[in-house]
Length: 221
Image (cartoon, rainbow, N blue to C red; front, side):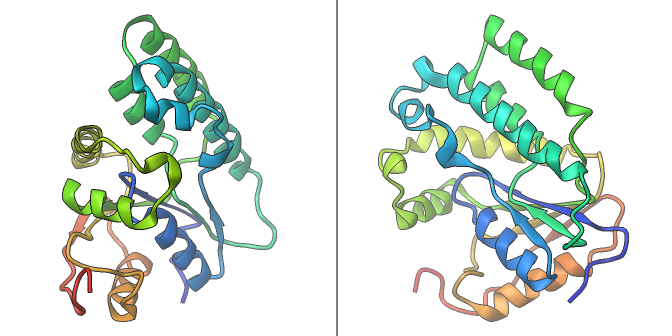
């Protein structure tokens, strides 16, 4: 399977637990591209942030900003072995988190640095946003059982979900495919995965399109 010739950089987006990393790897494999995954484990403040968000928000955010800038900035150098790159995040997601977790002088400093970096980061040719309810996100988070997410605050995930929805419902910077993954399980159901990949690979629209897949299997079965 092959993406359009003018699509070489696809970003999969979604709130924590939406399945973006899994889909990014599956899509990259299907189109013989390279998958770029966010380096969560390299952030030394993340576990402390989830234990005390107010105290560790700034350190965590700045560490992610530096990491994301370095990783995505490197994509500007052409990969001679892969024509397509599939990332499991966009650089703009960093600001979504920052506006939720920072305030005052810390947010002002963050915004200054973000604006300086943004122009050096490539813009995706297509963004795929995986949308679902907070309840489904919490279910998925519990299922993957990462140690630092054991006590994940539902209120925080709900606020993050609202912030993501608000950002992408107003997004006008390029092609955007919003997929409702509330009632499907593309990880365990090959038919649902195949239909999602077809929607992404065949996507040919200059703005925003919504896709609401019909479930094939039994969710949470």
